[in-house]
Image (cartoon, rainbow, N blue to C red; front, side, top):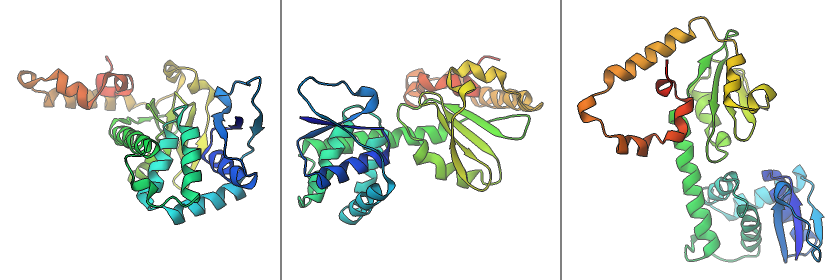
Length: 254
């Protein structure tokens, strides 16, 4: 089996679909370059991401699928799970090959996988909307660290751009080592070496002089609204899992 090796981008995945049809190859396996292991008897083909080829495939998908089904494919890709890339490649090939009502057939293992994975990614997206905590730096920018299970920054960017349209902000994913910066005009993808190494690197950031007072006020608000007699930690952890606590101001010790 020939291995198609790509860079892990959405453009690269769509380019791989294009290459399968152009080269008339179906018996292939798509792997991320980070997971690629050369096999003695298998051929390999490096897929170079090309916007023009990817755009043709993208337009074709949106023409063949309902918007909700297209979003499921994209969300599954954002999961970053190693097995999802090859599954998506072959599912897209089947879509373009004319299998009728394919995405409505939940008895199909690939369709079921996409549906379940997309649901998990969407759930993580909603949690990120609730758990992002901005801190103001001395230059007036609002900065937040996150570490979601999946790559959900592309799904939440419109929410924060609309909600904080009059502020400069940066949301940085420490797990994937990139962030989205908004300057009140447009959003740009950025990488910051100083922050990507560890969350503790934020100690080097210069914060606004009033930031600590706002943090204290936020903690006091949560303490004042807490009712000890009604404390239900099991339910609380269902809504606010511990893995998010290290970035929540109200959970950090003073």
